[in-house]
Every structure is written in structure tokens, then in C-alpha cells.
Amino acid sequence: MPTPTVIVALQHAQRQLQATSHSPRLDAELILAHLLDTTRTRLILHHTDLLADNVAERFADAITQRASGVPIAYLIKQREFYGYDFYVDARVLVPRPETELLVDMARHAAQRLGAHTIVDIGTGSGCIALSLAMQAAAPHVVAVDISADALAVAAINRQRLAPPVTVDLVQGDLCTVLRSVPVIVSNPPYTVLDDIDANVRQHEPHLALIGGGDDGADYYRRLAALLPTHLARPGFFACEIDPRQATIVSALLQQALPDAQITVSADLAGWERVVSAEIT
Image 1 (tube, one colour):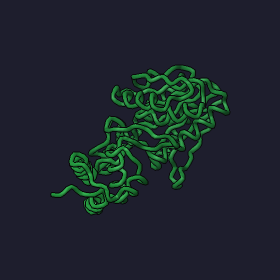
Image 2 (cartoon, rainbow, N blue to C red):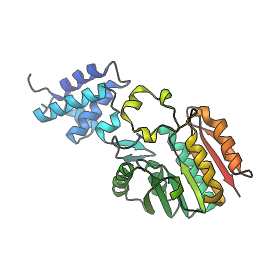
Image 3 (cartoon, rainbow, N blue to C red):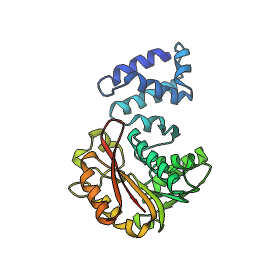
């Protein structure tokens, strides 16, 4: 087979991805630009260039993976979140845009409370903790995860972004969290296995997805049990949820913190996405 030009390779890849991707041409351009260490704009400007044999082979392999459902973020090792580019791979969940609401709420709460520390439980790639750190929401941000693999990815992002405040990466479970923390945030595992999209279930880490219990809310139960001893007064806690969990998570937080103001906030798509508790 003759060595293809950029445009021919992209057209072939687009046809391969047509049945499995909502944006086949964009996916193909992003993957090839990544392999060539260039931008999509430069790729299009040089559309008649011939691809080197090794690049053509790697591109074909990546397109096959994408057609099988591998997330585009894993193939290009990058995902934009809160205006920052994060390194991601199969060791961590791909950051979702709806999670930016959690960052917004934590940032505003930290500023309102004059918080000295923010703790992010289940940090994964570090997208929440490092976005808050890049915004200098507090002088000290602690990112906690039970997975050493996830923390290795968070460490890459900490080095690449070089936030202006201290960011500590801590391996451990919920009980690792410091006591008397003014702001605690978490995007915990909250899905039930049967509810997860087949491609997500096949390719993204189950440790970061499955919440436990018939309702996926076991992790929230453990979080709620921590709050009376670990959340400072005044203090703010917020967690991402599946919209169907708004009632149960609100009840868990109210039971744990009877005097707290509980708020359910919707994302830009109108889905109930974050439950927060604030105490004075």
C-alpha cells in the first residue's frame, strides 16, 4: 500500500470511525496531530504531505483502538478541563466538563470562607485539585487518592501545570483526610455497574466509577460519616452526584450535619449534579 498523504489518511480514518464516533473527522485530526506533535491547523495546512511509514502505522493502530471505543483522551494523552490541559491515560477517569461546576463551587466557597486548605478526595488525574490550585483558591491544596497509579498521573499534571500554591498528593482512603478542613470536595465513584456505558465500562478504571451498593451511594455514606469530625466550622463540603442520587445524598449530609444548609446545584445541561453542605 502506498504511503498516504495526510488528507487521504484522515479520510480513511473518518470512514472507519463513522459508525462509532459522534465526531469521526475531529477524532482523526486530533489523533494524527498528536502523533505528529503538531496542531490541527498545521495539519490541515499541510494536508498534501506524505506520512512517514511509522506514523501511518501508529495512526492506523490508534484509529482501530478508537473504533473499538477507547476514549480519545487516552489516545492523545490529553483532556482540557477548566481551561487547563491535563495529561490522562487509562490509569484515571477522563475528566468530564460537568465536573467544572464542582470546581466553581469549591473556589467560591474557599474565597468566601478565607479557607487555608482545600482537600480533594478521590483526586484521580488531579483535575479538580489542580484547577483550584491554579486559581489560587487556597494557599494549600491536598489531593487524596487510594490509587498509586492515579496519583502518578496527578504528579505529572502537578509538574506540568506548576500551580502557584502548595499541592500535596496523598495516597490513602477517606480516613487519610486532615481534620478541621474548611473546604472538602469529592467526585467519588457513584455509578452502578449496569448503568455504565459499555465503552466506559470496558476502558475506564472501575475503581473510579463504581460507588458500591444497589444505589451506588456507599461512598457517600462513608463521606458523610467523616464530616462531623473532619469538616471545620465554618466549613463547606461538596460532591458530584448522579442526578438520581440527589435526594439520598442530601439526606445523608443532613443527617451527618443537622445544622448544615444543604444545596443541590444543576450543571449547564440542567441536571442535578452537585450536592453541597455548608456549616457556620
